[in-house]
Image (cartoon, rainbow, N blue to C red; front, top):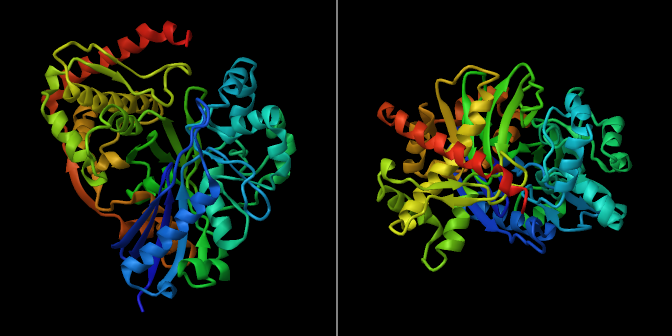
Length: 499
């Protein structure tokens, strides 16, 4: 019998299960999609039972594709999108739809807490900014608008913690994930009644699940789940971690030298440090799965989801299969020379990193421009948003010798090269295609004792596929474009507040 590790990745819509051997070789992948519902402007929801069934389907699928017995899987773990909110009863049924981190119904509380001093007061404990998609702002919204939902709720979960609950029947909140939610006192690594009271959330304290670490065993597969999935009853399930931590782990971020970019729904830009950074201007400091390390992060929902929207809504009549989305986009982008595209795109469809009311837009369109120019502007605008975040991070550390990239963008060599040319830093792409799932599998490997540490697991399971080397001849051209991007943002700043 072989020995395998299973990683589950619960993104905003796609659920993936990936199986790895103990050398990090990807054995099989299976995926299942869930619907995202937008019942009102600013609401982004999913049905929790649909999400669970998608996980069941993905697990069954990956075992079947690999052609193994479920008993050969020695451990598994899940990752999922950070923040958002999943409210369930004691039996796991939802009291309301789950909310993804792009949900902005709680925006009024962000403004209130920034203006009345609440953010400044809680910052030493939370170590992060407040934003609309956090569980804290969403919980306050329910308190004021639908209190009956909270009255029925037994457990307040993060996305992947809910999946683990369904796998094991045991309720836990994993520390790395919870440390990015503002529900936890990150400084002291615990829940804090006083902190919750500062946000008017003291009544939810007993609904928060007990805390556990990423590399701890947090229950085992139940008999019922074994029958549903093909997993063996009693298989250990590790704590896992948020997708931003899992992706960093899966590209080998195990020391302070490297930086990681995750270009997916969110623009995530991060590094790890043995010292936390607490700064009002910084987006987030959270606890990293490797003991003794903190993750320092700048991010916003301004990345590749903007391209997905463009392809889905603007080019909806073009017949695209999932596997050739980047090939199509790359071909369009390559039809326009770098220096010939004067169109600016602000990737603020879901939120922004400059003004809470900022909106997406194209600026500089002329009659001779076409979809190729617009697609290149989308590519560039998303990289510029990452650059904006990275420049903020460089206030706290020296420039990295290389950046490792994760997320859908890593599938596009054209886009990866654009990252290298705009940032003027070598961009490394790893061999693995499903980084979130690999990061989750690494957690399972540590929890089950297959590896003695996260670094040991990473050393075995992570391999660099290729490196995009920056072209120095493009530095000045892209600096000029980036400065134009910033000028457009500044020029529109007073207009956005009218929306």
